[in-house]
Amino acid sequence: MIMRLLFCCAVALSSVVGRSQPNVLFIAVDDLRPELGCFGCEHIHSPHLDKLASQGTVFLNAHCQQAVCSPSRTSLMTGLRPDSTKVWDLNTHFRDHVPHVVTISQHFKNHGYRSISMGKIYHGGFDDEQSWSEPARKPDTGTRYVLEKNLVQMNAKKQSAREKGLKGKDLSRASRGPPTESADVDDETYSDGALATLAVKTLQELSLRDQPFFLAVGFQNPHLPFNSPKKYWDLYDSQVVGLAANPFPPKNAYSKALATFGELRNYEGIPKKGPVNDETSRKLRHGYYAAVSFIDASIGRVLKGLEQAGLSENTIVVVWGDHGWKLGEHGSWCKHSNVQLDTRSPLIVVAPQQKAVAEKLTVPVEFVDIYPTLCDLAGLEKPQQLEGDSFEVLLHSPSYPWKRAVFSQYPRGNIMGYSMTTDRFRYTAWVDQKKDNKLVFAELYDHLKDPQENENVAQSSEYSADIRRLQQWHAEGWEGTRHVLNSRQED
Image (cartoon, rainbow, N blue to C red; front, top):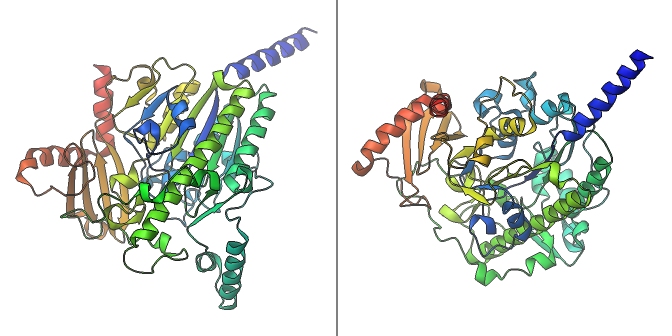
């Protein structure tokens, strides 16, 4: 009898502890640049994300580790940088190189959480069984294209490509439709709207459990194609949207700094070579903005579902874009580079216990910092593997001493560009990895005087002292930055 009583007490205590643990709503958005109302962009309709931002902290200077889907998402989910995961492309799974790494959702699962994913969390067809408590959930409805004319045309292209023997990615690229679509349909007709519905349903289900949850919801828009219901397209006027203010490469930039935006060229109506004309550029920017507003509305539905399920007060909400995106700036499109437009991405955090709200922080943070931060917010120990630093203290004390720089990288064959971003500068060292990392080219952009990064000033005598300091910081790397951060905080 005594043993049975002790067992029942233990179960009851476990249930109470479980309910007291904060939940995590982990929202990923593909290709979302920090062009939102809460980031000071009044031309964007993003009321739901703006409202969320008013309840927590907006990181205005957040950077991914590499501006392309798989390396970025892998680094965020593992807390490791690309050089540690060996994931620099879209074809490598991190378990091939770090098979025993514990991902963030796996870590929460191991500590009693129910970890669930839906939508795009890892890149493409990759997933990670060890990261979740169950297989990924999928909406019953919703497609990327809706209009019949586009579906017919794409099917015809696919059939032709198959007859030519194309398979896999080659088949996909040869059968793509237009880069934008705007059908007069309900949100749920498109895949992201259906995903939001599934997320709301899942939150209702989870609210009935005693077990805390880690729910990862990954939206595809505004990744190409920029498809959304017509009501979001109608929020904007292509002529008002306009064109990029700097449609030219940065002066004195490294010749390999930018890519030729092959990702966009796979879509109908985009030239295989050369620039995109003004009319097409306006339509693309219009479609991108509409897709952003569609995702904002979809996230708004999920947040409303969280509230209606009675979970808002005990749930940590994190919204992040996996990297930025160029919309004609520098005469380029898409991501795939180290320019600030590509590495910088939105990060919004709302935690039940944070004291400082409606804060907009300019200190640099990086996506490997998210894993340790969520551990601290949930009261979990942090794995030794982590290569980022918890910014949990900034949610309470925004002026607390923080790290001096964050790091991103991008490969160009055997040349690797290692970028370091501070509160003012972006310094990039392009090194030849086949020649003992010999410096090939250096770039320096002064965001105080040149926020659009239109001129590389690495050779300017005006910045000689800055260059020497930044070169030293760069040589010390993220480990040196962590050491300085720890020293500051100990003081």
